[in-house]
Length: 121
Image (cartoon, rainbow, N blue to C red; front, side, top):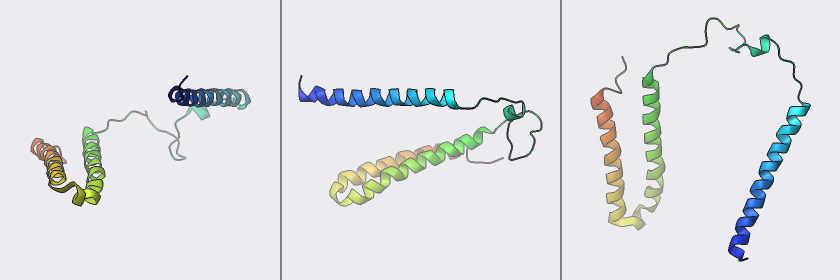
């Protein structure tokens, strides 16, 4: 067997050993843990206050849209920082690539503004 496949066998053995170890520890924990279910333990915990009403409430979709926009621009920052470090070495090609990247993101932001997603009512 070549050394190439021996390295994969080593990784496979460690992965299998990890799975067996996790399964064994979860089994030991399920045997040793105390089990004393009561009605009070099944209640929803609300910062020390007894829960009132149902646990269902409606959430505005706008929160998710703002979160998604934040993630998009956060990812933009993750790509821009390495470009800023390597900008001299990348030259004109790097500049054109990052400008196209930023224009694509600005197009998405303009579309969100046009659709009125960022307007809070």
